[in-house]
Length: 72
Image (cartoon, rainbow, N blue to C red):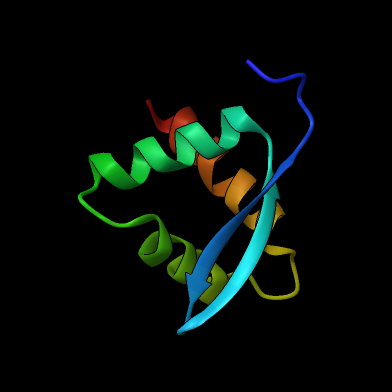
């Protein structure tokens, strides 16, 4: 496990490459959620991006992951 520092990773949203900095634990959970739902990470990120308002994408993904984990 990493030391908790965010790692920059690339995503494609609306046909454009962008990067998001997430801690390994959040990235793994995000990837696992996408897989469990039969979706791509880019597709799930695009949905989160479209609904996030003025919140940063990394923060919106963290909140999404937390909400999903709290459901279980």
